[in-house]
Amino acid sequence: MTAVLATFRAAVLEARANRRAFWTQLAAMALNDVVWVIFWSLFFAKVGVVRGWDRSRVLLLLAILTTGGGVVLGLLSNARRIGQLATDGGIDAALALPVRPLAYLLVRRVEAVNFGDGLFGLGLFVIACHPTPGRALVYLLGSAAGAVVLASFLVLVGSITFFTRRGEAGDLGFQAIILLASYPVDIFSGATKVLLYTAIPAAFVAAVPARLVDHLDLSGVATLAGVAALFATGAATVFSLGLRRYTSSSLWTRA
Image 1 (spheres, one colour):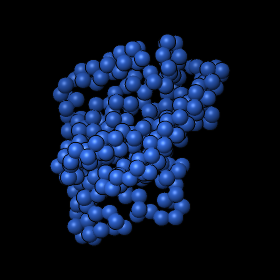
Image 2 (spheres, helix red, strand yellow):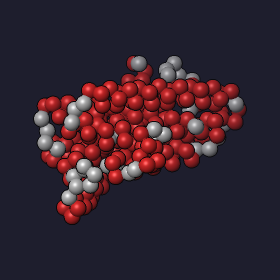
Image 3 (cartoon, one colour):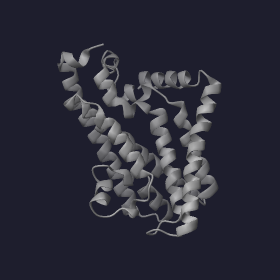
Image 4 (cartoon, helix red, strand yellow):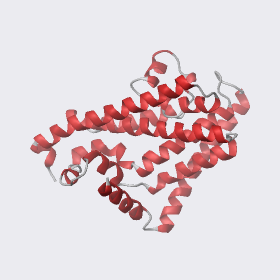
């Protein structure tokens, strides 16, 4: 654990080495998020309510998504690069260290630009989501659970590369879950909605936590926590199984 924390500190210091670029990147990402807020504000000014979702609830969804997404894509940015690391031999260095390879890889790289998402999410919640101590607690816990689901899903789909020797699954999975999590889950129906609660758990990244902030339900909390634990366990298991193939084949150890 000490080695992992030291690696994480080094990655943060590396990301902050160029202070001007660091803050410029944060501002650029926050500006991109502002565009989403403007879009949804104009949309709901025209249509009012869509299947139970109004401007206030969608802004809450965006606050949770950007907070959790900022944590995952900023502090654990290699979660979306597991497939690329497997095909490029980038995992080799982790295998030579006395640390858990997955933990090391996740904290090894920090993307400063995505810190802007996390800060924007916090600010949006404070400004537009009617914060109270109770709502703030559920928001923080929901964002954390959503971040676990997001990171676990990215590691899981990236680990498919170990078995297929192709890295497209990681990129496609990342694009799919981020895009689908950006929309209220109830605007979808049929097989698509089922997909958002199962194979691509976008609903649990932001929509379900947002619903719990507005209407706290213990069964919903238990479901969210269970899904986060299930995907975290599944990601660790698939990565571990894939790592055995990686270390047993010379194809995967090229420089």
